[in-house]
Length: 180
Ligand SMILES: [Fe+2]
Image (tube, rainbow, N blue to C red; front, side, top):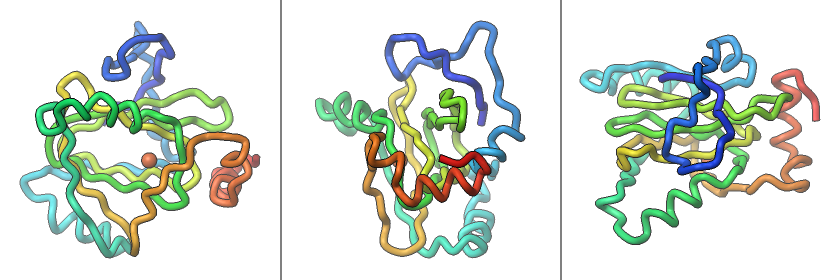
C-alpha cells in the first residue's frame, strides 16, 4: 500500500491525484491518525486474516465485488456515492483480494486528504469517527473482504456540523489526542 497526500486538483476521482513530485505519507502519520495496515500475501491470507480477526473481535465477514463490467450503467453513480466524505460509528475493515482502489482519509487536524492506494494483500482498518471516502481507480475493479464485529453498521454519515459533534467523532479525536 502506498500512502501519499492527495493533490486536491479537479479531475476524475479515479486518477492517482499524486503531487508532482509525490508527497509520501510516513507510517508514523498513519499511526497517529489510527489507521492500521497489514500486508498479507493473498496465496496464504486465511490464517493471518483469521488471527487478526480473532485478536480484534471481528466475528463476521463477507466479500464485496465492484466492477464497471459487473455494474454496467449503475457503476458511475455507485462510485460517486463511495466518494462522498463520511464517517461511521464502527471500524471499516477491508482485505483486498484482487483489483485496486483508493481510500482517502482526512488527517486531523490539518484536514488534508491522505490517499491510500490499496492492492491485493492489503488489509486496512479505518477507525470509527474518521472522515474518509473510497474510489476505484482507472482499472475499475476490486474484490475485497469486509470484516465486522457483530451486525454490520455500514451506515455512512456524510460530513456535516452534526457529524462534527457525533460522539464517535469526538471519541476518535480524543483518542488521537487532537480534540474537537
Ligand atoms: Fe466508509
